[in-house]
Image (cartoon, rainbow, N blue to C red; front, side):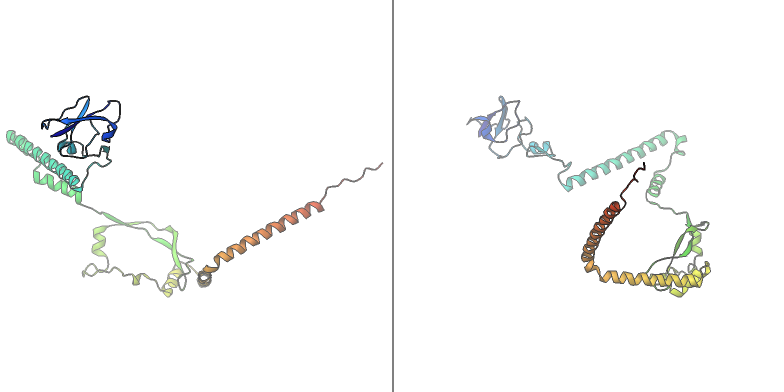
Length: 284
């Protein structure tokens, strides 16, 4: 067996190459328990790479497992190196938790068997598990609140007819029990759901006019809102088709602003020359 004795200084960083230290090699008998002489002695019979992060001379399989977060002598930011190791830690924590719960249950049973009077006061394990399951996984809804807002004329140009919207004022909120609402709403008695589909949520123009008349809007106001929505829709269409000319329009606006500044500056100079302050001559 061939071993190499490497001499290092204690105030320097761990060596990363053999040529950076003074070494002397000689033939020695086979001995797996290598020792340090003024540094460390390295067994070169099995491995070509070593971990120099510490000053220990054990280079067996324990060297690789001694620091799971060190790689080639450098500190790693990972707590675990593989997914299997992470899952094994999680499973171990779960097993410890189950073991602790079993131990507490056994202690309760032993206490109940030793003192009969306390047995009636202690909860049963099944009830404890049921309460924990309900508290962790159950969701409960009690009431449902309705808040109705006022209807107003809106300015949405994407609709035909009068645009309708919601105002800021609202009526007194109504609170109803959720179970009572689900049992009394339309279609609940025969088992058929009365919830409207997406196409039924669209309000026709005639129905919107009737809804606006019910809240007090006149025919003149509704007609003016329809005309304004049509005008906005036409302007939107024109601006959509003229998007490719937007850079040209921006340059034209810059040129107009420049001419306007020059003209305003010239007019201001002319006005300052015209209104020259003068004083009348003194009479003797």
